[in-house]
Amino acid sequence: MTTYVVEFRYRVDRAGREPFHPAHAAYLHALTERGVLLLGGPLTGDNAGLLVYRTADRAELDRVLAEEPYVTGGVVADTVVREWQPGKGSLAATPVAGGRS
Image 1 (cartoon, rainbow, N blue to C red):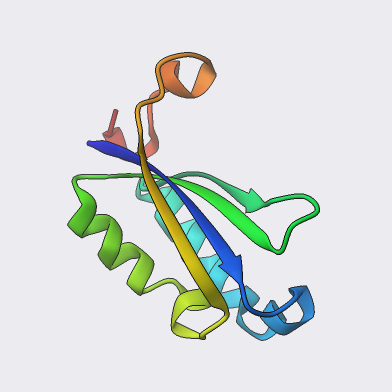
Image 2 (cartoon, one colour; image 1 turned 30 degrees about the vertical axis):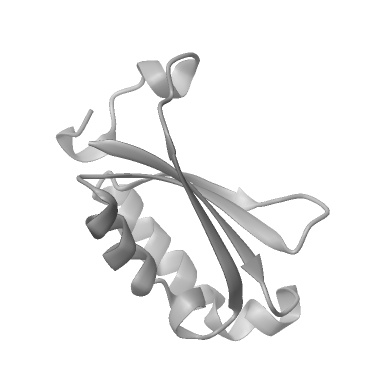
């Protein structure tokens, strides 16, 4: 399994994202239940969000991101993806839901 840090930069403000927010939240909840989404949330003071995913490979991550309601709704202006190797802290030591580690 590979861990990725993903930053979404939005083309609209929070109010502009609101129509897509219920679907976005439901999608993230489902990914969390499957053990794919480890963390996510807005970046304070910036029109962006940061998410941490664990997938089999980049192709799986790309499929996950392509189905993200904020992406399909056209509110994401830019996506930055970085592969990450967490080695310290509670995230590195915590088993992931769904049996993935």
